[in-house]
Structure formats: structure tokens, C-alpha cells
Amino acid sequence: MRIDILSVVPELLDSPLSHSIVGRAVKKGIVDIQVHHLRKYGIGPRKNVDDYSYGGDAGMVMMVEPVYRMLEELKAERTYDGVIYLSPDGEMLTQAIANELSLKQNLVLLCGHYKGIDHRIREHLVTREISVGDYVVSGGEIPAALLTDAIVRLLPGALTDETSALSDSFQDNLLSPPVYTRPAEFNGWKVPEVLLSGNPKLIQAWQDEQALIRTKALRPGLLLEGEKG
Image (tube, rainbow, N blue to C red):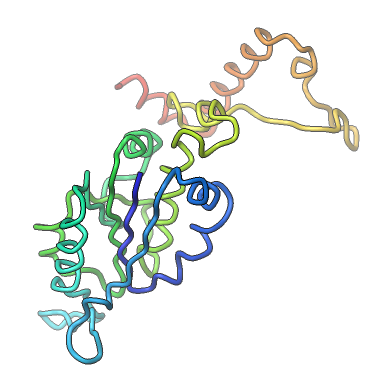
């Protein structure tokens, strides 16, 4: 899989894409992540990528030309399954979307910055918009890193135990059950006996029950979504 990320502040992506699961997946050749600086196609001697907003609103707006020219360069080399803009008013990122995108071959992630991007980019160049929550951050770099992480960890070979992703929260519209590790007792706090039983059927039944209990208590809306599906 290949993921190209377009940004005006590519340095923000250095750390999250170079360590842990994503970093290891890159080193193993499971995913090719390329971060591109939009100033490569900036306008004029100062390589400007933003300008004042028509209408006099406060804040600078990312220009359409640098984004268009960079996308044209990328598309000349390969076919992309989608150009995704990280936007606060896009569809909310879910595990189902991460699952879907992990099956693609080539993706472009566009990081907005400043006040936003020229709307013509959204109308003519972007194929999908995704939000990571109902709030605003300074740019799309952190959301792009988050989306990339959610996708990459699902790729075959990215996790040491590939079955681990199947028990993550939000798979099957359920939160994950509680997890424990050694010691079996600490400060008088004990691990549930069933997890020490060595009986896979009992353990699975307990985990399923706990997942349902936690989801009902913490995120009941997930169960309604599952029923609709």
C-alpha cells in the first residue's frame, strides 16, 4: 500500500510516522508513506501556498494551484483510489472506514492549514472528506497521522499478532473488554478468576459479556448503529 500526504508543515508528521507500529510497517515494506511539501509548487519567488480570502474574512486560505499541480504530478505516476481531505465537516472517522481504506492500494491525504482550503479543491480534486471529531485543530497533519495509523495497523504483517486488530474497540460495534497482565494481584486488586482459568470458552464468553456491558454503559449508540447495519 502507498499513502501520499500533502502538507504545508510536513515536519509535524515526522515523529508519528517514524515510530511504533507505523514506523515498523514502513521499514518492513508493508506500506510506503511519502510526505510532500506543497511549497514545492508554491507561487512566485516566495513559494506562496496561501492568500487572503475573497470576501474579506479573517485568516489565510490555501490556494488551489499548488494542490492541483502536485496532484497532477502524483497521478502521472500511478492511479489513486481516493484523494482524502482531512476536514472538520467531513464524515466522522470510524473503524469501519479504517477497515475499508486498509483494502485500498494508493491513497492521497490532503492536510488543510490556515483558515482552510480554496473550495474549488473540495469541489474538483477531493474525492472524500473525513473528520476525526467535532472540533478544530491548527491543521490536518495530526488528523492525517491518526488516519494513517488507523489504516496501517490493519495491514497484514503490521501487527505481530494479526488477530489483535480483530478484538479492537469498535470492531463489530462493540468496545473492547477489560485487559489485564501480571501480577495476578496487586495492592489487593485481583485479576478476574476466569482469565486465570485457562479455559478458552469461558474466557471468550466473559470477554463477550464484558464488551457488551461496557458498550451499553459507555457508548450505547454503537449498539444502535449495529442494529441499523
